[in-house]
Length: 57
Image (cartoon, rainbow, N blue to C red; front, side, top):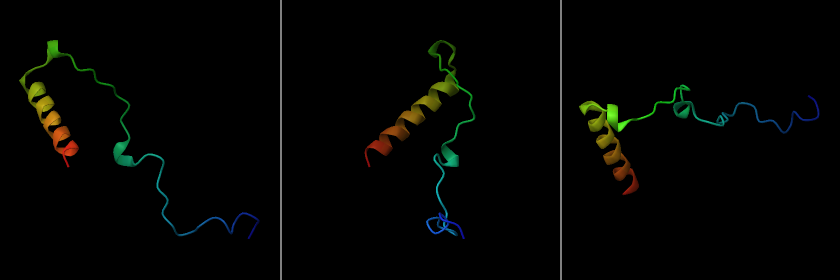
């Protein structure tokens, strides 16, 4: 065992800098009201409602 081996914890799970469920696929999608169809507007309303539920907790 070397000098720094005593400070390193073995057998413990360390968290990554960014959780895997928050990593993006690297694709940016812009939203344009001009090209939005009905499904886009419904999805946007659902996202706003979910955001309100989260903030009201």
